[in-house]
Image: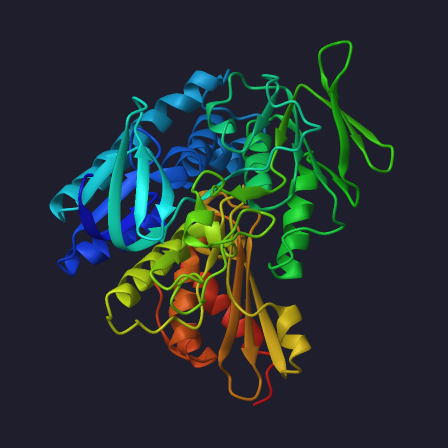
Length: 464
């Protein structure tokens, strides 16, 4: 037996690492068990960091950001191949792992490579990469194992032309056409990244709408931009059958009988909690049909009080940023610290091309609540910085209460959206009003000037 730890974390993604470091800073003995050879979890190795690195590489090599000046045919590199995409990815991942290993070392967190399974409420067996087994005991646990892609039996994932969302970061070649099954955040991000590389993309989604948590006006602008550059949408019908045609292409048959032919297919329709091998029955825990664990939304305790869960394994919102806070809160609660107050509003970032970011209420939510409101719009091309950058598209939408003048929501599509959103986030959480944006000075020239432009647009129509 390896010993008894005060806190054992299974998984080293955003929630696991933050929880481990928080517990270590409280002077607790902490063990992190990671199934991969290197720490970082899905976020570092197949999810957040790789997909955003792939996006940045695609935009740089394709010359995407300069096409406003030089035209759609402009390229930094004429022939982009899969090796071009992987070079930057390897360097980024090495850096992320080094930083995380150093954080664990500096804070006295013990790490162990292997797959953990419960054999009792306080005991784990860890199967290491060399197949040896080690027993460890803990007083408290955090399950932060993340998710794995859903693999329906009808889809042959052994085919090199059919990829899931974990495999696509190591895509063997750049296809001329790609079908993306699933218009969730992951599917939309990859669909637009490959579209920016001039791959012909078709998005297949069983629902008639997608990104339903985003303001509808922003989604409409998003769809318009994608259709303008040739992305095809097949909405309202599921992918019923996926097979290879005689000429070696992937043929996807939809539920309504339509077919989509492509060189490759990316399947992004759902992810499952990576809990199947954890032996949860040994500690009386159960998961839902998607392998996810239910927790108290304030403490992140499972139905077994000394076992916590955080991150993607507990479901929505499945963001790296919120997962970090979940892990920290779980560790604080586990050791009796007062829980930090949860912010009223946190931002969502969709790293598509173009970016989308949103915080606060959508216009649909405001109307549903019966609030008397006004909106303001700013086009990023209206700012001097936008003109300098050659931006032809992108907008910011702000929503204000007519009664209190308070900011209710900010919704941005376009270059830098995920960075710009934090100004709106701060004002929302501090209960700021439209007057903040009208009376304050913004650096010039910046895209952040869009806040003043949108606020003035709303102010012109507000009752005074």
